[in-house]
Image (tube, rainbow, N blue to C red; front, side, top):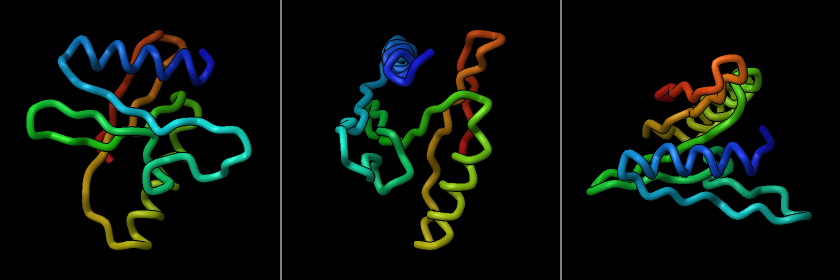
Length: 97
């Protein structure tokens, strides 16, 4: 699946569970498009607001590293979710990171 298809599928998946989802806009010629350069967007329900990143399972390692290094650099301790699309099983897997 392409990035936009993954984004739409994730929005539907989370929406079925009652989450409101916001993703940072993608713009041509703009390098930093993520929330704090590490999160693709946010999900909200009730009084919960959780940052999230999504990618394919094959690219998970680079995203884990990027998030870990950024959080260490700035002393951040908040948790977020890394949503991984498993192409073989055609389903999402979630890691708390």
